[in-house]
Length: 177
Image (cartoon, rainbow, N blue to C red; front, side, top):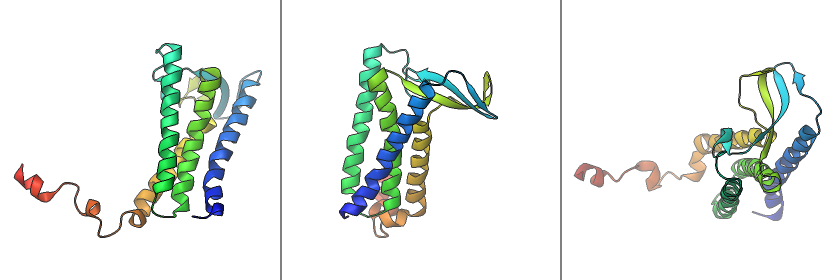
């Protein structure tokens, strides 16, 4: 890949992180809840991970462990981007969008010790969906792009003569046991 391709791959990551950061700053400065019909803007803080998991951990342990998990994903992303054998800009940009959302939430956790959530669906007091932020939405968009590429265009990644595509388990091993 050339420099223009690498710029194209990393630009979504930076844009997602900036959009998420500025949207959270906007939400934190809201004086009152905002109702846009079925969409509700209401400021909440998530001490834990997804859907409040690990919220009962001591604050220092929670921040360090969840931030370390985010750093692990950043390193994994960099390795995959470097080692990916095909150009597949859609897959690479999907990974960037996904990681941009993760970095947005990790940034919150490092700076404030909690993640700012402010979007939900439903009527006031009767939420039909968990409260989330734009980073979470971007992560799902990234997931969707990655799965689309892997399932629809998987032949670009898994060549026809690849053993992994033919057998999940070695047949002689399977028959033996």
